[in-house]
Amino acid sequence: MVLTYSAFDSGSLWLQPEQTWEKVRDEVMGLPSFNPDHRSLQRRLVGSATVVEPDGSGRILLPPSLRQVSGLEKRVVMLGMGNRFEIWDENTLNAKRAEEDSKPNEEPSAEMSRLVL
Image (cartoon, rainbow, N blue to C red):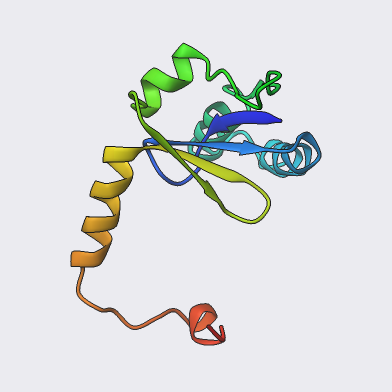
């Protein structure tokens, strides 16, 4: 499993199988590095990626540097997001959910409108 920062949400980490990670890594590193936004994404994702292995009890040790920058405290939440997990500090995730719930209802994107939920 590979642990890295989230590309989109400050305050969370991504945990994904190595095979999935390799595809993401290759796509990110394929972006032209002369673009400052591309370099920032490359540093954030690829530069911080760490291989982690579950211990005998299935626990994963989160490196202190990733815990600190993502603000993970005592209680964390793992969200299954298809091909990866998002790891959040419980309080940060609750605040994010409250913020999202308080936003006025906007028109869904064309992509979301096509979903049958």
